[in-house]
Length: 354
Ligand code: DNO
Image (cartoon, rainbow, N blue to C red):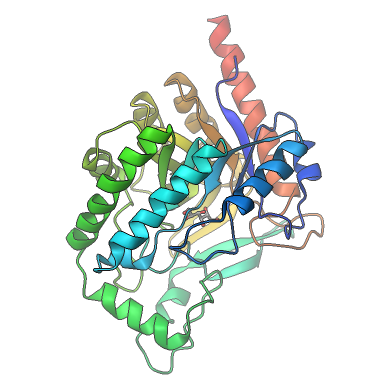
């Protein structure tokens, strides 16, 4: 019995990768998407949610995972206006739950979501991928007046001045402040998720260390333990992102996969392989031997510990001349999905034979 549910991220109607493409990937079950045209903190129109559901189900797939409902910066900063945004967040949970969504992925990273220094680095085989080289990050100082403040992937909706101001506010905050703000958020959101039968799945910080001195806390096993205890309920779970955790050699991703799966707290998995370097990391093909992670070991740890949530191939390289959204083309992610299917089948059949 295949307990994991294979899923694939889709960016909606504007995505070059179509639902028709995705449904042809063997074993595909669930689409992972979001309402993208509403600013963070606002309530998603029910009509937009219904339209996603209709399109996805029309293609023979399920709409069970949302990635992400973004957390407004005022919540992360603990500002007085946060209660309004938390109430909007709860309303979004209720709305997507009413449409059949079972799992919501989100993150609690100050300002910047994932950070890379180049999105089209050419690998030895001619494919391109996303990379992070520390010296390039160090060259961009958000508080220097002549800094052009651009790293690929950053939210371009902020002006340079706004970004500087918001970065300065975070720099005045300690990690403990951020923990406090996360707890405040969870205490209000998790009961709503529980009443709607939805699992919340926090995504680890990517990469899993502080950048520009901004606090980052969802970074390692010790902190994930602490996170899960903030509100010790099954709906307060994680998205195990192998690439985000695995870009630091200090994280034993296989061990964490087993531990948190056995606790029933992994609701969603992003499977990505990275090659850890002295000065950062490169995203690589999913196959274990292409990077630093033992993808088989991680899948086995999930299987052995009863994982039954959603899993998706994470960032793929650009291959075969494909162009499009970095990390989110069709071909390499489809290869990744097929590899995950193969690993799972082999692990499952191996276990049955014992
Ligand atoms: C990058 C993604 C992240 C992720 C968010 C979740 O490709 O893994 O942007 O969606 O951090 O909130």
